[in-house]
Length: 396
Ligand code: NAD
Ligand code: MG
Image (tube, rainbow, N blue to C red; front, side):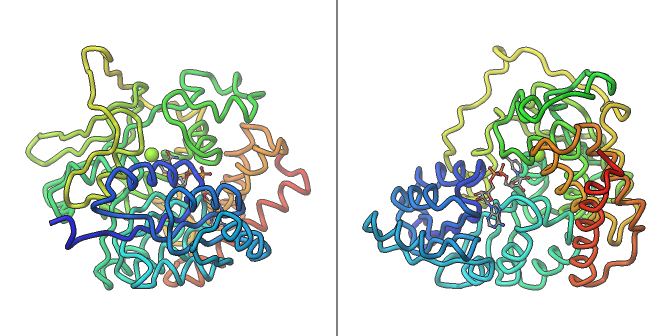
């Protein structure tokens, strides 16, 4: 019964690649759901334009200095949407029972942790795209979800595929191995030496997926797949030695789940995030996403190959951080965020991204991480160490 279960959806990171794809799916189902909260980082004009199209109750901008600009933009567009600003407003709206029942966590980076955690603690249905929050504090997030009865639907295409291959409730009993597929990114097949001078423009030109700049660089270094190993570990409670990565350049198989009886299940589909978002927005029902089905005769071939650890050391660094545990994944993530941002600004060479992450991991050895404060502190110290290494020219 669609009306009894009418959904109010908060899209945090609404102006981004995932956010706009989520809104595209929401708008296809006016009888089942509407966007009730839209949030963005700094793009006031983009946010106001989305408010004009989707008429949410609330709009929130991360930068507190932009509150008046948002309020003015909403007034000029003659919208009844209430303006809010600051990260605390994200957390308040994500956990408010009247504001939303479903939260699309689509902020990029560790900046998405607090609002995602607030939504989980409030027991919401959370469509989790923000993988960095899971890398930083996955154990605590999963615990918060269990305690509050929150439903997490993974939106990262690989984890969404695994979610679809597992029985309802996500019971991993009988699973022997999870195999994440990777497109290989724009530099697949290239040697380490040939990557010395690649530019940000080349790195963000992904062959199969259209995504925001940060995750596009992560795909080019394979750090994205490394973050996804850690993400899968938390979401599916799977130890590192039962998580594998297979490069699959066509990006049609979104991951595999192998069971103890020799069965392997896979989920296939075109590389379009609206499929995963529809799985979450309709959960547990199937709803249309706007993505057509697969024509395998036209695509022809599915290829698989092993990842190249020499050209792409980030994958191994992430696996080592997962095995080390404690604060190591938080340090890895924070150092990587600083490295990617410096690379995008032309301040760091492509091959120096793994070098910087490795340098910071060595400088801040893994310590036990029982609380959020310990993890936040590790995140802050890793950012400081990475920034210092950049400024002193230790890594360049
Ligand atoms: P994007 O850069 O396109 O969008 C990021 C969004 O976050 C924007 O709306 C931006 O305004 C907002 N934002 C940035 N900083 C913020 C802050 N401090 N506070 C509040 N909002 C802030 O990124 P994207 O590609 O949409 O990715 C979003 C998340 O989803 C990332 O964690 C990414 O790894 C994950 N993801 C994306 C894809 C994809 O296909 N794009 C696939 C899988 C996972
Ligand atoms: Mg992915």
